[in-house]
Every structure is written in C-alpha cells, then in structure tokens.
Amino acid sequence: MPSFLSVPIPYRWLVTLAFVTLTVVLSVTPGRAQPGDSIFAWLVVNTPTPVQKTLHIGVYAVLAMLWMWTFDALESNRLRIVLALTLTIGLGTSLEWYQTTVPGRFGTLTDVLLNIAGAVAGLLFILVLF
Image 1: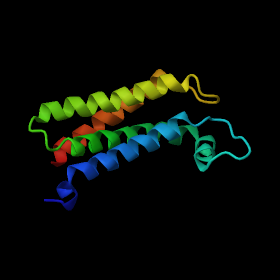
Image 2: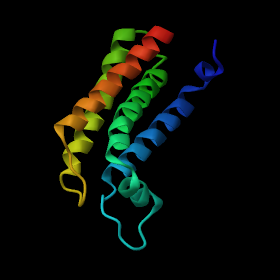
Image 3: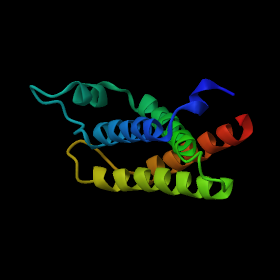
Image 4: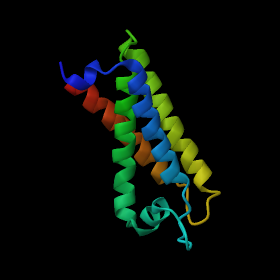
C-alpha cells in the first residue's frame, strides 16, 4: 500500500482544504497588475492563456483526486465519486461565476467545461490506479 494512503483523515482534510484555498486565491486574484500586488497577482497576469487553460484541467484533476483521498474512509465508492465530483465541479463553477465580478478576470463556459474535464480525468485516474 502506498504510504500516502495511510495518512490520517484529519491531515487529508488539511491538505485538501489547503489546495482548495490556493485554488480560490488564484481564481479570485485580479487579472490586472497593480503596484504592490502579491505574487499571486503576478502569476495570474503573467501566465499565458494556453497555460491557464491547461492548468484548469490539471488543478481540477488534482482536486478531484484529493477529495477521493480525503473521503477514503467512506465505504461506498459511488458516494465518494458523487461527493468528489459535486465539490470539485461546484467549486469550479462557483469560481468561474465569481470571476465575472473580478477586475481583469473572465468567467467562461469554456473554463467550466475544462474544470469538469479535469475533475472527470482525475477521478478516472484514481479509479484506474487504485
């Protein structure tokens, strides 16, 4: 058994919620550089669009996998999948909607679909691997 599977549940929650927090911070950071901005603003402004689109898939794949790992104590695999998809897609959709109010950011249906594709890819990866 891989050692990451033996991590206690509270630590799994911490890791997953830390990743959620990072995702939220990067998603709600304005897309326009201002003097004195944080490193997050610099990252958002200077990341090329094709890289940002690819990151949607990767970030939401990792997030779905983290939720599956966090909910590992649940006996029902179906319930774990539903929870992981609901939380991951819900976050991605909510953040895209919120981005419509953030200066220099744009919430788009394309990004929502990329988030969904990432979540599904992450779940498929976990289900095939384990």
